[in-house]
Amino acid sequence: MWEGTPAFWTRRGIARAAVETVAENASDGVVAPFLFMMALGPAGGTFYKAVNTMDSMIGYKNENYMELEERRPDWMIS
Image 1 (cartoon, rainbow, N blue to C red):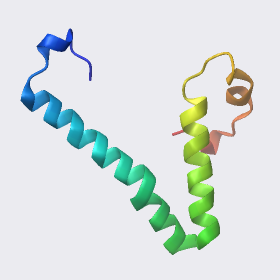
Image 2: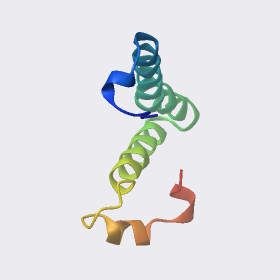
Image 3: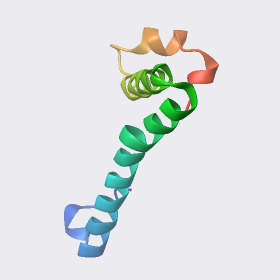
Image 4: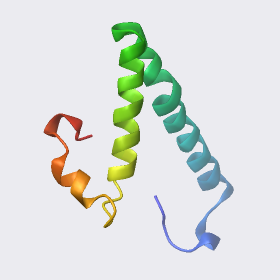
């Protein structure tokens, strides 16, 4: 989403980025866990949050997490 220097950003671009961030966080943090809880019970919501958190940590692919990345099952790939 980054398109150059900070001076390039307009009010519209900043507003669009803010809306996108709020929507993504609401989806990842509230809506999806709730749907998993509705379908699979509390264990489903906990499972979703655990996989989502691991994906966030492993997604950076730095030296600290390379071993985890290599052992991650295919079904966890987002």
